Amino acid sequence: MQIKNINGEVIFQNEAVTMKETFETAVKAGVSLKNADLRGADLTNADLKGANLKGADLREAYLGQANLREADLTRADLKGTDLTYADLRNAILTGAYFKGANLTGADLRQTDLKGASLSYAVLPGANLKNANLDNTNLRCSCLARVDLEGAILRETNLKYADLRWANLRDADLSESKLSGADLTRADLSFAKLKDANLENAIMNYANLAYADLSNAQLTKADLTEANIVLADLSRADLTNANDAIMLMNPYTGSVDSEENWRSDASTGGWDYSSDVLIEVVKDASGDWVEKDTSQPVSEKHFIPNVHYKLNEKMQELGCRWDKETKQWFHDDPEIAKKAARLVEQSPLRKPTTDDTPSPTGFKHGM
Image 1 (tube, rainbow, N blue to C red):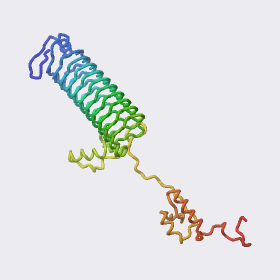
Image 2: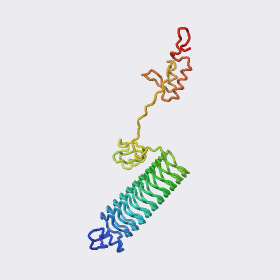
Image 3: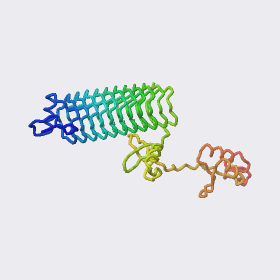
Image 4: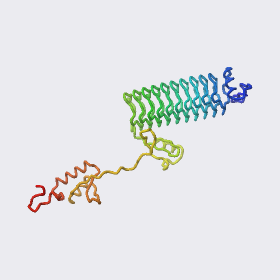
């Protein structure tokens, strides 16, 4: 079995039957696999600890549960690679390309991911505790329930990333780009978010206790029920926070702000006004549901015994005529009370039963 580099040159060969055995033997022998061509290779459960895979082509490879601990994957191409539950602790991944890769449940503690690209990557449940993700591209990635406690994410691109329930406690997100990111119920306590861009970010029920949000951009961010106890919001821009209109494409499940849909439409040349988008809000469970836009039925507060000569006064107060009961009413109970007092104090009030004289000239009940 041969291992070739991206130029087609043989860099290692042996009599092993499987590619997995061949690679494990090469790694144990200390053979450099720099620029190795591993496209589509099945290396599930392979022991590649400490391997030199700099610049290797691992596109669409299968590395589920593989041991890549302390491996050097600098600038390796891992586009679409399966790394589910792989052990990448202390690995060097600077400049690596992980677009669309599956890293579900992967162990990435203390890894060096500076400058790596993980846009659209899937990492739910992954452990990135104390990892270095400075200047990393995580745009549109799925980071739900990821452990990023103490991680370094300075100047990191997290636009539209899914960070629901993520643990970002004590993480450094200074100057990071989080516009449109979903941080519902994320733990950002003690996190550093100085100069971060959180425009249109969704932070329902997020824990921001003691977080540093100084000079952060929070325009149109949704902070519903967020915990901001002792958070530093000095010089932060909270213009129209909680006012962003969120729209969903029901066919894809994609959710974004109305402003971003409009921006993408102008760039992509499609009709933003299409009826396919529906306005959505978060329910108590943190799930997107269609917003109820139906108008609540208002209660009618009637004003009895209005003389017809007081009709103009009723109109001035904003009261309306109910044809069924043939009475004036108002939706606001306070205005209805005011109108009723005006009627009672007016000499033009319609006579009631109690006002009708008895045959003796006295009012009933006297």
